[in-house]
Image (cartoon, rainbow, N blue to C red; front, side, top):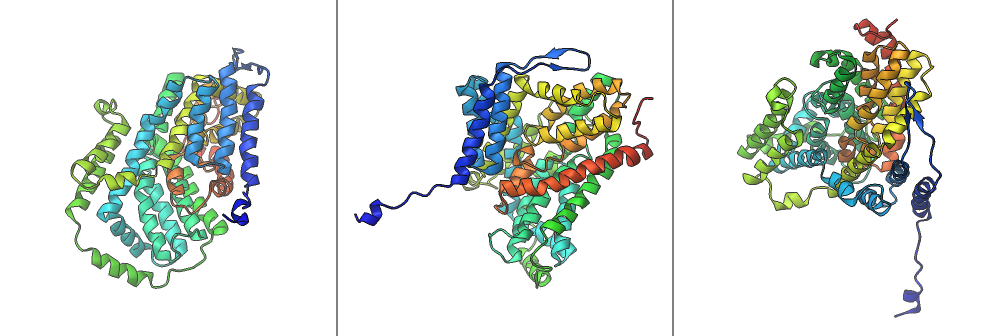
Length: 489
């Protein structure tokens, strides 16, 4: 062994070490800090923050820091969430790690398997070529087409399933761009746009996610009012579609593709499409399975007998059928991006941790108490902003659940109509543009390898600001014109 071999320098990534220590610093500073003051709701009731609740906020900040700056693989940060809960007695290990297999996580797993089935059978290529035949060779129109298709699919199926369906199609389209697997502005725009559009489209329909039916149930419980399927679509369609178009505009400004066109794409697509031949038996089987899943989940909004069925179980039926009939094999199962699955496992765990320890409710009351004497518009936008921040860290259903009850009670004192509070909250709950853990489409897009967590956060700030502006415009013009009550005076 030479002296050189024994004296090789060990290089340190000091930036990475700094953010690891910063996250730990946040955790220990809050964990060992003195008890925090009670939160007082509009009725004067005090909500104390337990030691476990304060610790869950500390863990919340640690995980957020590590996720944003990718100090370790995002899936391992999720494992740290469970470990810290158990080591510091925030929750029991059984509770902390049980959330890692929550039905919502299994729904994401099932959605990814659908994407694998599309790719394995060749459906991905068939759909990609058809899309490219329509939008042509211009990269700006390809980006617009991908945004519209993703947003459109989210009207009829869960936005996770929509993203999982579109993702392999976009992966194939990107290979035709001619830059192999290396990141480009076009690649970043293609997949970040997919994630943002899936969220924007999902706010329009009851079928886009579980958050709208859950919010409608809470709204009825607190106000006695009903939110219908078509009523939701009437008010949310303008907001959702404007945001899909704004997402495309933002991409064209900040992530403008390096090439204006993909030269020779039209001829190449025609040649490749003709080589596919007629649709195979496996392709037809996958289509039938997916249609069956989508129809079943869609009918849950109209058929009471189907409401008892869990969406994840319905989604996983297709997974079982793909393997039972040999469409997929163990090789495809081993190709699942488990880093992404773990990411959402950890997100579920920290979300339930904040909820069960009372920390989320305490934060909601503290925040909304700041605006209880404000102008009605400021109050509504503050609710929407709180949900926007929370939905980037925890389940959007949970973000709605912790804020909506408090907001509806406060709204009475400010003479604000409950409808505007509900719809503003639903809009921001569906569009977490900052963190990967905010929604499954974000994590699915990350699997492309085209962007970092930091880049996703950076580019997401712009549409997040635009969303708040669109909401303000909707509250003063669009929604009143469509018949929504804004104040009760």
